[in-house]
Image 1 (cartoon, chains in turn blue, orange):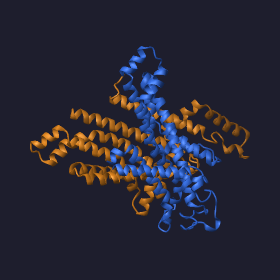
Image 2 (tube, rainbow over the protein chains, first blue to last red):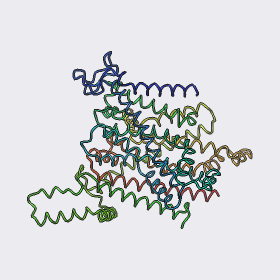
Image 3 (tube, rainbow over the protein chains, first blue to last red):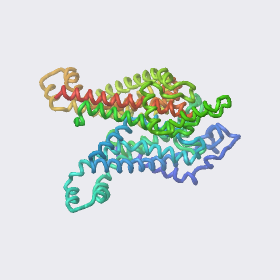
Image 4 (cartoon, each protein chain N blue to C red):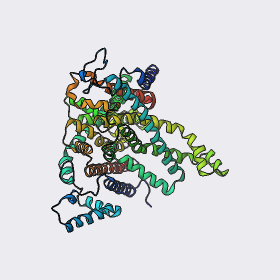
Length: 268
Length: 289
């Protein structure tokens, strides 16, 4: 199992490296169209073929994985920060703040994520630029995905609140803000780190679902999600199986993340 | 004040969540692009007093509080607004499509949970590393595939949309089911029952299952929300005429009354199933205590 985990880490490092260096590694610009070669099969010039508009699939895959691999962790970090702020305030101060935060958390956990994302996405204007749609998609993910983390943080802080070190600091006259920032927050690092790594694959998968439905990042900017939108025309998969490459890459990335980070005990 | 584990608290919390969801829904409708714009005001056939009356009616809706109260009142009377994409009232649309989604989700939940329980029991009872490794690998693989892609695979294999929902539910249910069955099998009273010579089936039915059940019931509540969430991409890709497909088309057409109503309906279902799961757990715990 250690070998498999090392392989998963190696794969993630390789994909991250290649996608970050997409500008140098990719044969063409992701938006460049070769009108005479639309829907071309894999060849020496186009290793993964081309799409309906004649764009090189490999270049788009590299650029798309860069966007997804940068934005999903950024959104996960934002969601973890929101979870930390709400969970810490609720767990430390208690009372009505705790009650309100608990109801808010329960509300967010009860909502069907994808339906909420579709509703919020529908509020955005029609003429939104591709980069604004990228930011909006991942910001929406962060805004919706903080609840489970907040619940875990709240429970940890409520437990830590009566720890000897915290009681001692309070007795020494340490202010609430200082206690939260310099005493509780460092102790929450393992919990926050776990929440962050749980959210990264979840956000990658959610973005993929939105992209496959045509409601994710707007064209021509590629992402692992909107590259899957071709699969809506699933009858073509049998004659052009290379269309599945983004799906395969996404599967391997998410499986590696699960394997390396959150799911290692499960897999073992 | 009732205790946090009392039925009154659980039901009260559920109602509070639903009221907040209603207000959030009303706010979204209120903020939607084009809210308050009435195309009748451009119709030359209407007289000045009629136009003034339309403007007054729209002005009432501009007051957020009046709008919230009107929205909630409408909800209680089944008036969910009118869909721009489908060109008909939202209420009948939901009534028409809900059975398809409920059927698909139920099929998926039953299939997913049965598969998870059977595999978890087989892995825990056999104690063979190979069985567990295969089951975990299968579950982990399904967990790494977006539900929309699972729907595509099911379409390619000519399987029903319910199977795709089962593939979403199974990997979330299996690890928990396995852990609960394994822990219950290792409990001292189960070992004692086996040492006293009770039949394996009897031990499993009357000692293992009652111990493993409460945490799994809680998970059933969560899996209902999960299954309804997964129904959007699955129904959209499978062209199944349910609520998920309707929400997808509404999202493409920016039809907020439909989206808000469907989200609220599913929140009601999710909150009710969570409250029901909590009440069942309380009942089961009282019985075992």
